[in-house]
Image 1 (cartoon, chains in turn green, cyan, yellow, brown):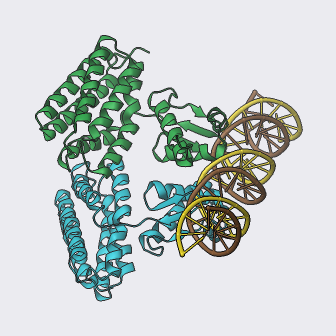
Image 2: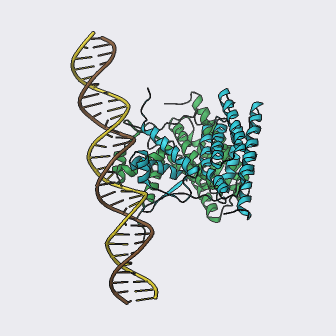
Length: 227
Length: 227
DNA sequence: AGAACCAGTGTTGTGCACATCACCACGGCA
DNA sequence: TGCCGTGGTGATGTGCACAACACTGGTTCT
C-alpha cells in the first residue's frame, strides 16, 4: 500500500516538473506562465502553485511582476560568465572536499550513462543530450559527500543549463560534435573512477566545463549563427 | 516624496527581520513561530507571511510540519563541519575570482568596523559581537565582483551564524578572547587592503574562519562548559 | 490494568473572492 | 495632429474561511 502524496511531495513534484520544462526549453525564455492555467493543468489551486513559482523565482528561473505576469527569465552568455567561473571552482572542490568512493550501483549507473552517450552520438538530439547531461551531472555529484556543495552545485547547474540548449537551437554549436565530446568526457571520467582517482575525475570535469563554456562564447561571438 | 512600499519591499523587510531574529537567537532553536501571531505583529495576513516562512525554510532556518507548527531549526557543530569546510574554500575564492578594489566609501566602512571592534573589546556583548560580525562579513563580500559567489557565501554564512552565539550563551567560548581575536582579524585585513593585497586579505579571512571553527569544536568537546 | 479508540483542539495547507497594480486602447481637448 | 487623461481588462498580491493533519486527553472495551 502506498501513502497518498503529502503536501511536500506535491510541491516537490510540481517544482521538478516546471524546472525541467524551463531547463529543456519547453518554456522558452520570455514565456509568460499563467498561474491559473498551470493550476488547472495540475489540478490544484493557485495557492500551492504560487509557492512553486516563488521558489523558481529565488532560483532565478522565473520573475514575477505584480499586475503583469510571471515570465521565464532569459539567459545571456555574458552575464553567466561569473556563474561558470564559480562552477569551475566548485567542480574541482567536489573532488577535494570529502570525496565519496562510488559504490557498485553508482558505477553501474555511470556505465549506463556511458552507453546512453554512445547511443546519443549515433542519433544526436538536443533534448536527449540535455537530459543525459543533467543525469550525468547528478550522478557525478554523488561522488562528493559534502551536502552543501552538492546543493549549491545543482543550483548553479540549473541556472546555466539553458544556455547550452539555446545555443543548439540557434545553431551556434554543432550538436554532433558536442555529442562526441560529451561521450569522450564520460568515458574519461569513467576510466578515472575505475582506477579510483577521484581528483583526476574532477579535474577532467573541470576542464570539459571550461572548454564547453569557451565553445559557447566562441559560437556567440562569430557570425556563423544562422537564424 | 517616498514611494509606498511595494509587495517585494514588504517581503524583503519581513524576511530580513525574521532572519536576523533567528540569527541573533531572539528565537532560540526549537521555538515555534506562530503564523497568526507574526502576521498580527506585522499587520499583514498569513498569506504573505507564509511566503517569508517558506523562503526561510529553503534557507534551512525553519521547518514547517503540517498540523504541528513551524519551528526554528537547531544547529549542531557536527553537521556544520561540511558547511564550514565549504565556507573556507569560498572565502579564498572570493579573493581569487574577480577581486573588486574597495572604493573610498568601502574603505571608510572598514575603518568604522575597526572602530566598532575596538569598542567591542572594551565592552564585550554577544549580540553586539554578532551584529558586528555580520556587518563585517557583508562588507568583505563587496570585495568580490562575482555575484553568484556573494549570494552563496551569504547563504552559508546565515546557516552557520547561530552556532557561534549558541556557544557563547553556553559559555563554551570566551567572549572577551573572541572579541580580541576578531579585532585583530579586522585590523589585519584592513592592513592587507590598505596595501592592495586582496588575496592576502582573503587568506587571512580563511585562516581566521578555520581557527574559529576549531575553537568552536574544542569548546564543544571538552568539559569546560558550565550550564 | 492495559490498550485501542475517539472526539477535541490547535496548527499548517488549500481554495476562492477580492484588492491592487500595470498595460492598452479609446476619446476629449488644445 | 499630438497629448494627456481615463476607463477597461487581465495579471499578480492579499485576506479570509475552510480542509487536512497531528497531538492530547479521556473513555471504553477486553
